[in-house]
Every structure is written in structure tokens, then in C-alpha cells.
Image (tube, rainbow, N blue to C red; front, side, top):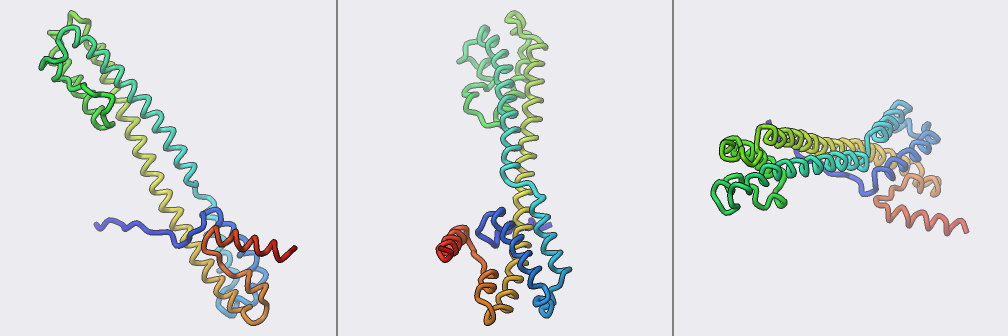
Length: 234
């Protein structure tokens, strides 16, 4: 199966600005609906346009998705610290028995633990469990036992679960971004088509109504248009 190619936004304004533009346009089209009908644009088509807008409005925005992602990342970081502490509980006992330059110590592979990636830390935790059990007979006099090793095991499980949840939230955000882009592109395409009809209707009849169907392709252009409108009102 071929991988779906990522799409791209057809518009340069924010999703919120696009939504407001479309809702304002729907009101204007409703006013001019009788003039739209000769173009095959009736009330049903206008309701479809409104449905596109409602769909966009119902989707969670990126701030919501980022917030969810930050919450689970904080949880993942907490469980990472819990795993490091559990590993230190083993390694303090190992160091009591073996110098940190010996092969028995280095076999645990915990050097530079603070610089490890999430995957490396999880791998390290599992290795510590395995090696500690292999050497438990040499370390019983330091207090190392299955209870201490079990703490590392529990911390590994908690960290792995938190890591999976974080990855799921990252994927959820990617999907949400794609859905919003698809919904926005659908709205934008419909808006452009309706504006072209509106401009065609009013091009030689009413310059003010014609202007109501002129699109501003960026937030900066919208700001310039608002300033010009306010200036003309003075």
C-alpha cells in the first residue's frame, strides 16, 4: 500500500480567520441567493458550505492538542526520573561491591545515564534488571534483592507505558492537523468559488457589493483592508 502523501494548506490566513471570513460570506450569499441561483448555487449548496464551516469549528485546535501532548510529556518525564532513581538504587549497591572501573560494574551500562534518550534509558533499565539478577549472588551482602530489582522493573513498565501514551498523543496531533487542513481547504475552495460568482454578479452593477466578495489571501491584507475601510469612514 502506498503511503499517503501529506497535503498542504491552500490558504495563508489562520483557521480562525478563515472560519470568520466564511461565516460572513455565508450571510452575504444568503442576501444575494436569488442572484446565485442562475449559477446553479441554491440554498442546498449554501447549507453545504455552512456544514463545512461547522465541521471545522467542531475540530480541536492545535493549542488543545499541544496542551494534551505537554501533559503526557510531563508525565513521561516524571516516570523517567522514577526509573533513574530506581536504577541508582541498584547501582549504589553495585558500587559498594565493585569499583566503577571494573567489568562487573560497567556491564550494567549506566554511565552517562542523564544524557540518554528515552529509548536508551528504557534499554538501560531492562539491562540493569537482567545483569542484577545474573550477579545477585555477589551482591546480596549489599542489600540487593528481588524487591530492589522489582522497583526497577515497575519503573521500566511505568516509563514504557508513559512513553507509548506520549507517542500516541503526538500521532493524534498529526492526525488532527491533517483533518483541520482538509476541512480548511474544503472551506477555502468553496469560498473562492462563491466569491467568484459574487464578483461576476456585481462587477458592473455595484462596486461596494463587488468588494464584499473580494478575498484577502493573508492576515496582512485583511489588516490593510480594514484600515482602508476605517479611513474611508472618517
